[in-house]
Length: 143
Image (cartoon, rainbow, N blue to C red; front, side, top):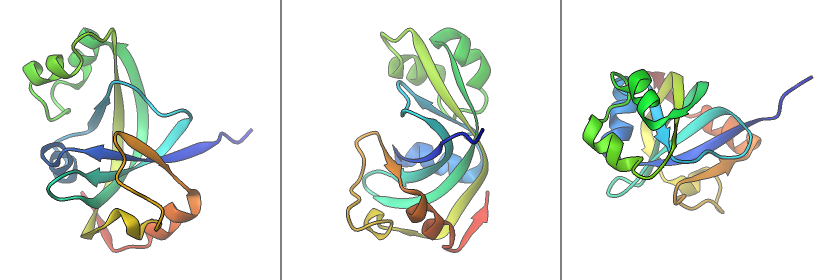
């Protein structure tokens, strides 16, 4: 039986999106996840860049207690423990999206170029399959 896989666009601060684009960051950390089984994520870098910079295949989604997750992601999450703990303060669980096959666009682009109805997501938004197919045709390279 075929699973319904989805593509999600995440808003990510420049410091963290750059670490994804250099290969230093292999886990995208989240307090909550979209509904559905993620297949790919599209990376939107927030202010001051405000561009789609790349995309990545979702290898696995991890759900653990905040402390247990730190043991898994500490060397590849692109964040120090102090900032990690502050981000998850008051939460029981942490979510880590493990990324693979990360691709960087040679020319980052405005989010409206995906679809004229798109706007920068507060946290995340869903990307239609036909929009993602078009997006993947843009010139990109593996990280």
